[in-house]
Image 1 (spheres, helix red, strand yellow):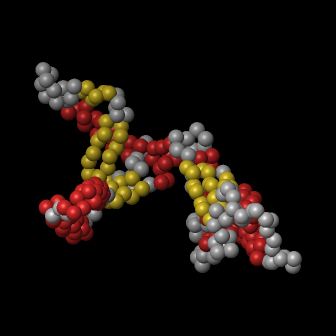
Image 2 (cartoon, helix red, strand yellow; image 1 turned 120 degrees about the vertical axis):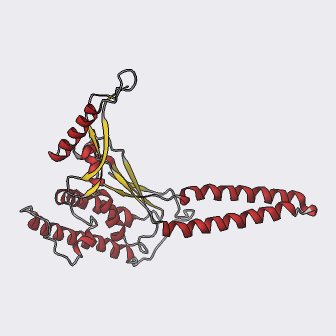
Length: 308
C-alpha cells in the first residue's frame, strides 16, 4: 500500500520552544511504502526516514506557522462535567415524569386544547433534548489568531472571509456619540485585512448628531487605523488606550513610536473636542423653540452609515 502526499507523524517530544508536548508535524514525503502483503514485512526504513525528516524540519525551523494548527482543544476537568451532567439527567427524568402525567391524564372536556398543548410541550421538550447534546460534551479551544495570515495570506487576495460588523444606536443623548465612535474605531482597527472589514452603523433615531459624529469618526480613522496596525496597539479603542496607566514604551522598539503616539493623542483630544461641540450644539434649544410641520410624524426610514 502506498500513500502519496504528506505524512502526519505524532510523537511526544520537545517542540521548537522547548516545551514537552505532543507535536503533530507535517512532512512533504511523496510516497511511503508500507510493504504489507506479498512483499512481506513493513518497510520501517521509509517510516523512520519520514520521522527523521520531521525532526529535522522542527530543528531547523522548516515547519512554518502555515502548517501549524489554528487552535487546540483544552480538556475540561471531570470534576466540573460530572455535576452538570447529573443535573441534565435529573431534568430529563423530571421531564419524562411530566410527559407521562400529561399523556395519561387527558382532559375530556377540552380534548382539542389538551391535545394541542401536549403536542407543543413534546416539541419544546424535544428541542430541549437536542440542546443538551453539545452541552453534554463541551469543548474549549485555545485559538492562535496570529497564524491566520501565515496560512491564508494578507491583502485582497488572501483566503480570509470578509467580515461585516453591525452597530446599532437609538438616542445619541442617552448613548453618547463618543462611545459609539470608539466602538466603530476599534472595529475598523481590528487586526484583519482592511479590504475584508466593513462596519455598518444603524441609527434608529435618525439623528443628525449621530451622522455628523460618524463623519468626524471616519476622518479620524484615516490616522488611527494605520497607527494601530503599524505599532500593534492594544487595546484599539482610543479612549481606553490613552487612559491606561501603564508603561506604553514596553515592547515598543520602533524609534518613531513616541513621536507618533504624542501626535495621535493630540489628534484624539481635538477629535473629542469636535464631538463634544456637536453634542452641545444638539442639546441647545433654539430661541424660537422647536417646530414640526403638520402631517409629519418625525418617523422615517432608518439611516445606515457605512464605514469600510
